[in-house]
Length: 298
Image (cartoon, rainbow, N blue to C red; front, side):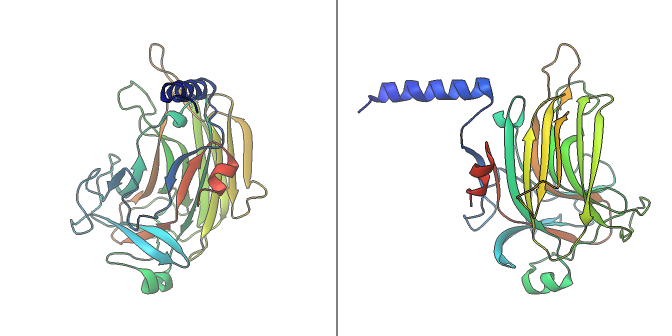
């Protein structure tokens, strides 16, 4: 049997090779399967009052664990007219999020699997907890729900507040505060990267929004400021809804600073300020090095 010292050296060697090559075998990097019966697996929780501040009784938004929403464990994220902790002005938000990890920058390629539902009044009446309400989008393109967010707070960057990979619910209504969006309500993906002061921006319009439907989401992302990969699978994991294998997925920094940028994973319910509560349900989430690793994670 190998000695403990030899095993330690082998482990160090594998970790060093992984860090240098951006490869990690068939590895699950992050597993948020909600098996603890609460939301404690998530490193940070923001109730709309500031990161890790407050609770569901503090007057901001709501973050509830559900043992069963239409057949699966779920986190309920509810924005309210008083959940204003986001640095963006004129917005409401609640978050589950993870700090930057080694796999969230170049040269790593990752896969993410999760699911989400936009509930109607019928689902809320059967599964909702205190403060939860049917999903009602604000107008325009400001209903974000899954992001790999640029992390550049210490850098003189034009793109400090932008997400490299971001999903939202868009409507064709002109942006207007305090109005429910109703025109062509659909899911959309925005991809940003390259020069952080004049980034490459790609919008991918998804299907019309279905309320009370568990959307199954699978993402493939290669982090690179010029030759990245984004593949988005939606409900059908056999073929991507969108695929681009040569697209910027990170920002390039000014000379003298670490380049490219890296990202943090955020699961928000993030909208323009509005006078109503609005809920999104998220199922288990996993990030891994391969498609197989996340499909087998839960």
